[in-house]
Length: 239
Length: 225
Image (cartoon, rainbow over all chains, first blue to last red; front, side):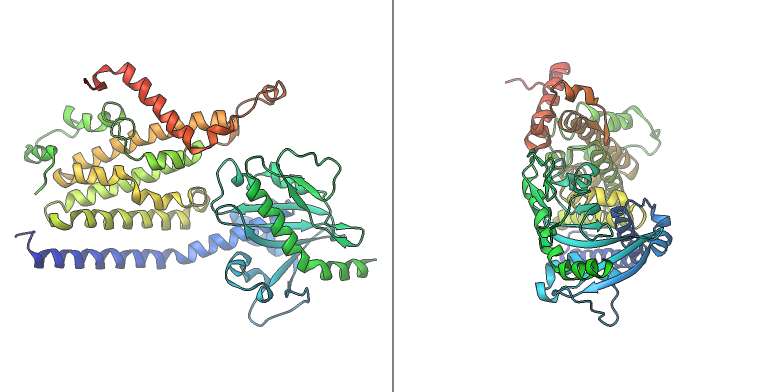
């Protein structure tokens, strides 16, 4: 058989492409449910991690069910909405941040309860240096003090911006407050190495990861702004 | 149909033992005398990108190993069927398919690891070592030697990657495999992590130092001119 004939080359290429294409499609379809489940469990883990509940992927679903007692959705003006066929958990804030105009985005809020104490978990998304960053910030029952946070990223520089997913950075947010009196100020992430001792609205950024750090600050400022009316309303109700 | 030097290996007797000295050399040469990174200077791109942390380097090496074995075996089996005019594209399709497969499987079964590697898995497609071995070896040799060649080259690639990553992670972040190894006391005495180590140029310099050490110990590698 002459493998260099034109007809053979075409036939070979066609068969190869069909075989490869079909097998990849088959594998991708077959593994999709597992992959989706992994993403779902990871989201639950991240939400729980922001309130310092450790969960392995196996426990995530059960613990999420146990601790997250309420899921709320807000629109861009901070009003509680309940669009049909959509739950707060299903909303992919990273995707909405990328694809939807700011007025059209949904803002989920997860309410965590343990021994009667409530925490409020806000998911958020923004831009780092190279790509998207996202995270969950949990507030104490006063809806002002940060109880915990998790951040993650897609393609930030390892060792620099990528460190936002490390505990040493995330723990810096604990105890910071987003309201100054009744005024909303958010938490600013300042250039790495700055003196933030005793400043309740400032967090020390990562040296060498300034743009990613600033991205975290911008993301918090912009996202939490939407929740201000809801937080204020509930703070009054709590008094 | 192949223009490569190793073409002679095809006419070997089938009685050759599995680990003949020739086959053993396929495994050991890429580790030193014929190392894909330090001697052939292939795969430098990924050596720069993913050697900031040891863990990434290890997983990347393993993924390259898997893809390389798969690609070498498939191309070797098909070597008499592949039309030589489209062989590069055929190799590319095979490598790309294997990489996507690895990526999908990691996402389904080893989700943590796949997150660690993120974009780098896709970059395996562009790893010149894989294409280089397919073109230079698998197209002209039987599956078993091709398999050994894949293992040898992936190991040669892997050990350099891990060596560079150890240096960079140790001096850049004071950690190894994510665990802190430089005690806090050092930092209290004014020790600083070397921020330059984290940046890509230091990978190149580290590889350069490895090449230097290797050549000064192994004098037959030094070109005469």
